[in-house]
Length: 157
Ligand SMILES: [Zn+2]
Image (cartoon, rainbow, N blue to C red; front, side):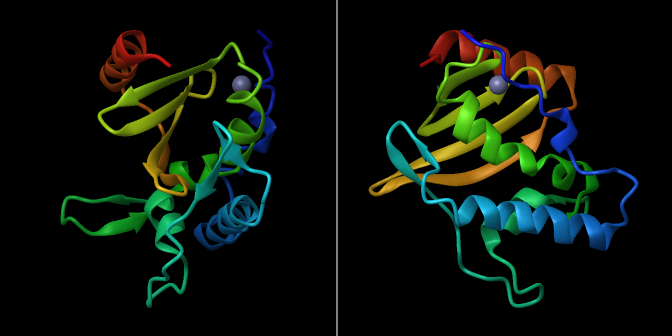
């Protein structure tokens, strides 16, 4: 077991304005999409590459970068965008080298990669040709952390 999660400095700056955060987090998402070597359990990571016509960005990105509000409309979320650079590192390093901060578990059909150190959850959905990056988000509420830890204990891989 190693402890490799020393990349808090990868988080984007919360002082950046919305447009900067969108640009930087999108660049980071594209870096993931373009990384051929990125894989999970020896299978490719897949992305929802279809583009939204309003933003001209992939749905895979928009889903991770935004949150649904009370009106059921998805709006860009600062906190979610700040964490996007962690995705590549967790997939490339932590989940491969059995990082001591990582728990991997099954949640119905999905595979969850939980980084305890950064309180960040990555959800992958198995597909025929690999694992679809379904969503990823920082977990803020203790109640949700409790549920994640419970599932990790019961359905750990
Ligand atoms: Zn780690």
